[in-house]
Length: 529
Image (cartoon, rainbow, N blue to C red; front, top):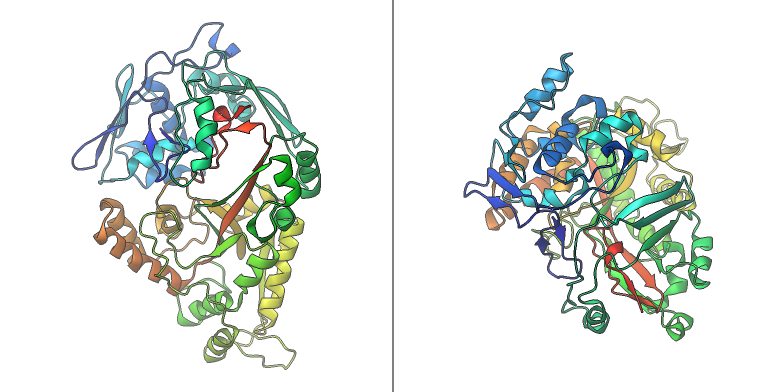
């Protein structure tokens, strides 16, 4: 499935399916019918023959997530939905057997050449949101078997583009996939963006993709990226680096020199969350006893979230009020758990009460049993991360807490995080759907070692998470999620800090560009005057 890029509120529509999925009355059976005639891009793995997308490709691709060989970090996404028989198939492989792709399981199977079906152990009224995520994309078995461990360097799909060239850390070039099916531009401007109506009218009826070629320049430093846009070498800059937002759009308005050139600017509140986690298995910050909870809550109260928004995000961020993300079900701007309230005095009082005192007079607190206390936050080495680290240092020093930083590259930090070797680490998550279940899923015990980096495992929370998953959207589900949000705030496995706001710029000759905060699959719909 895909989201209508321009519709507000968010609207699901078929992509490779012939229609939206058929969902049973008990929300446990989801039947999907693939549109006939869709072809994969040509690849040597197909032996020179056209290769049609069929239902078995989706079944095979989703089974790969369960195959221990691939160590998929997205296993939680299927496991939380509990398709019947797949966990048992994985357990067999983990016990030393071969993962049997050809063994039919009730929870994911083909009904005919173009139809496949999910059968879930428990109801899930929102299962269709999963079918938009790239985790649920189809790959061809021949391609996987041909390239093996090198599959990541050989993407072969059914989309509008194919990979033409890839220079690592420098440039990616995508070319029109000549096998792409017949699709026409059919988007309409939303009520909150009437200025796009003339542009979209110009594009209506044109065959997709509108651009024959997409060139992605990998420019890590913000200044060269900005200069490339100003010189016209980039059609779109999305988003504008936060350290340049005040130059590009002072006082939330495009800079006059950009306006004179006809540059199009748009601010988009993202459906995401910026956060830090505490490793609940770490001997210093982990655990469920009152003094451990007090330490985490004190750290959260001491952290200056407002300074983070000003200094690092150029005020292009909204404070997180709870586990509910703006733009998703259940979010209410008038309801908050005070999980990001900046209150150093209260933080100090908590630390004093639970025995985190400066016993030797050196200005730094010790643990209740008198041992040295030093927090450690994992971090990269970019300028933005250095700024964040300085805010952490000042915030913690204000309440007598020492903090050190473990600096490493992202892949190394990710590896250590998955192994439970970090005390604290921060990043951001984009929801990908109009629901905050992803945030709540980060605290669900069975998601440990995948989505649940904090390794938080509280039976009372787990029960609430499982209950809300079975419920359709409505007041009952919202009430259950609020109880879960209160538990997350009380236990503080995650410090939920901000929701980002992106500024995107497009050159005057670009038509139809508008960011959809739930997806980044839009290049095929961008045209030129």
